[in-house]
Length: 466
Image 1 (cartoon, rainbow, N blue to C red):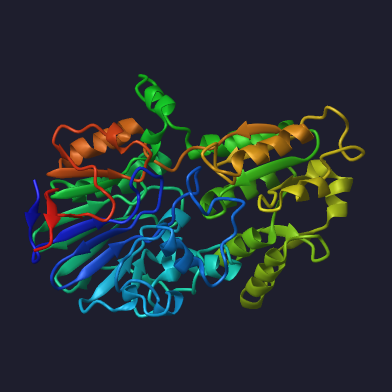
Image 2: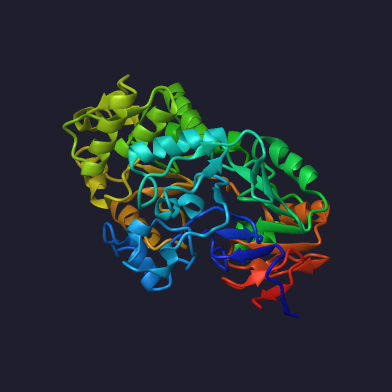
């Protein structure tokens, strides 16, 4: 049932609707606004900006707005990136702030479009990672945006936002508890209960108990075959120790070179894989951008390519920029070294430069015919079959006789864990987002499957303007 209410708290969902990512949740009162996350979609089969489409530099926001791939939010966007005379450039009179749950592109990818005068808050580790992302040019399009460390609740007008760290797969991952005059909203960000024992996430559940509205991600419910497996009595996600062990076993089994793919913003996993490679007598070599991010964040023993190695210009530029700020030189590896002694190396290829695989010793005479060569996939690019670049990359691996070895463990909660979380929090209404099948989250109480851009009260009732 609709009701008109221009004064109470409203919630609008400008992303995450039957997609993984693109989270943008606006909580508004007559006196304030807070935007929870500002992400982009993970490009899928229907995304107009999926590969091989290249965005036009300087026109990214205008182009996305023109074809409906960015929400029409007034007073959020940088006027300099909007078309001349756009009504979206008008500032909102209410104090407004953005709160970033964590540094994944589907949550921070549109931050570069935001007004420069809007404060952005996040966990201190997220701030550190955002700085490394900016220097390494691995972040969002638009202008660089400073993020403020959040160590205490932040009040914006009559709204108070409290950050609660959760378990995910990136430093600083956090949920938010948003207190308004009409009730409290809890937002999980991205969450799991299996990494590091799930202790942080368990504390969020405790603190969120009894909230009015719970907004939760549902990533792992997107895949019916996995959801069915989660009903098995003994189903457990792979532990981080198991990820490292399996990756190490694949390195050890490879008689020559080993390839790796992991998402470099998972800094803890990257550091542990560097250690595992070292323990097995190998050096893990990263492309310039990824090496720059890890080196800036403070990871030890980062190795990258020597200056004379062919790389995309952005890799060279990012490494030069970070070495100006953090001058301790990472180890620089030459292609000649890798070709001469491939068994001493693990290489993370530059997935954006697929033919660069041919520079590595993956073919004769550097690799004997039939010699096993693993591509150790630990949640790196390409992420999976739902990505547009997955099949082309798999075709290249097949052509070169490289074996895909999946060793990852999702950073997201299983379906069983999500259902248990909802039961433990027992909110007045649950809003499942950030997944292809939000309806797969079955709850005992009220559930809202929101529509894009519509306004809802905290109890899930749809609002209409007077």
